[in-house]
Image (cartoon, rainbow over all chains, first blue to last red):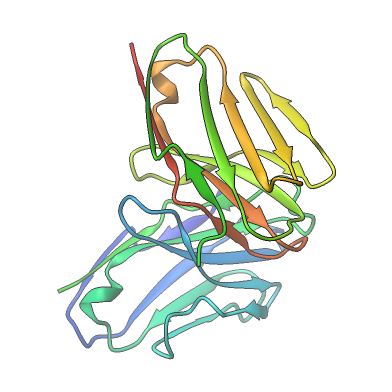
Length: 114
Length: 111
């Protein structure tokens, strides 16, 4: 697509439920990144992929968080047994192999856990 | 953990003035990037400077990099009200690797 698309834009879920956030990167972009951003803060790195391979998941807060990119395109970030502290804006970005043009970010998914 | 720290945290200027934001980082980098974010919306890539470059220009933007001091600055000349946004520096430690963002500078340009 023309840009990075994230869905849903907003998600309200009850504590304890699982949620899946979707990211559709720019066509042909090799790398895909997940970030979390709290209000008034910079984006916090979660994990990233080159093609379908997860290169670094050191930013995932705990084992309730997981991500996949099975065919090297669309990615899903899954949060199991959500907690109120998981409420945040989750942002996805993609970049070309060289990374020379920086990242292109999606509009994000606002997750609220009640 | 955050790698970059922006200074100042907030900056308020009049339209037409220049705005300078600084970023310091801790470890060696491959490149440093600046991003803009309007009112909590998506981040937009502004400019990338590589570790072997000292200065780069793009329109009204000028970025400098001093690897010996582990610092960078972003200068916006002849600011406009539309430049009002948060500005983040981000460091790339390894080519194609993850970016680590700072906490940002909130710029307000008053007409």
